[in-house]
Image (cartoon, rainbow, N blue to C red; front, side, top):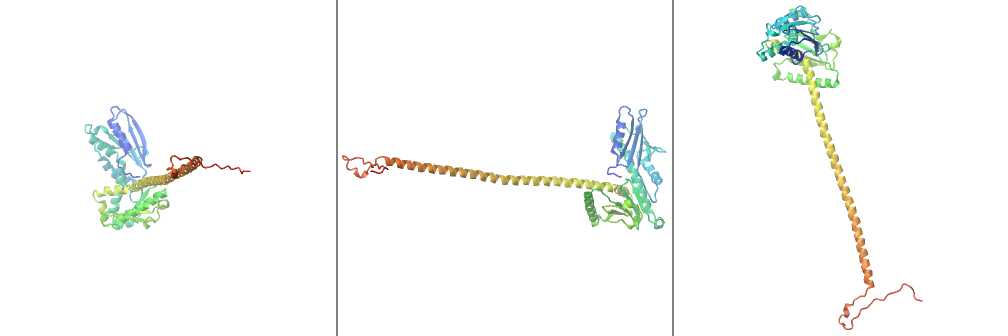
Length: 371
């Protein structure tokens, strides 16, 4: 499977480690990247300036181009990465597609930036191989005349860089079409991918994008893919096609076109992953805002109840206290009246008879009946 970054991070880190080592180190490392690309790095303590790098990928190309022709076309490209630093070992290491012999002592020591640039370029050998293979296909298909195309029956070229991600390239009148069968395991990924393909087709149909390769989507495979393996044509997200004209493979545009085609699967997965992360962040943010609103609403509902309950309690307390005060006042008035009834009453009308002034008492009446 092609990847967005051209250089292999593990290969680059290992080569820089060997190049910067102050003491001789021995390395015999075998690792995989993206499930289908494997590397082997070997460095001996006896001669640390010589490093052997072997690489291979799962390549199943069917059509007008064979694997030997593609590899022979990449030899010169790989040698020109760093003249005097890279030698191609023939035959390669058993089980690998290509083996390189690196002379690290020919990399300039005084210029760190230039050394890092060369090592980074060496770590891009797998991307160079994949790009060179597809470049050769596009060139052959582009410059092939109609008679040769008819002799080949316009049979599509099946390119497999990953077991579950093949795509097809075939020639039509004045264009080359690349078809990508899209299949996803998760249903949510299918929904996001379908939306992305729809937007891609709509944007590609605008006038501003007239120079870009025409993009189209279909739920069924093109009729040119009839007779291809059924498991390749069984998809749940349809088929995405790009129409490549001679303008897209001229000069430096060829490298960009090839790299975009190789990374289309990786780009779609990257877009789906970013979209899922964005949706999840929005959902969490929305959920937090709803929880805050619910908490605020609950607090606002509980506060008036508490206030009303307190007011009711105060009112009841005031009511009870007021009743007690009224009862106490009434009792005082009654007691006062009773006390007044027991004492003498002063008659103001007799004030002029000061010399003959006297107090008149109210007679007491007995409750007992007289016999």
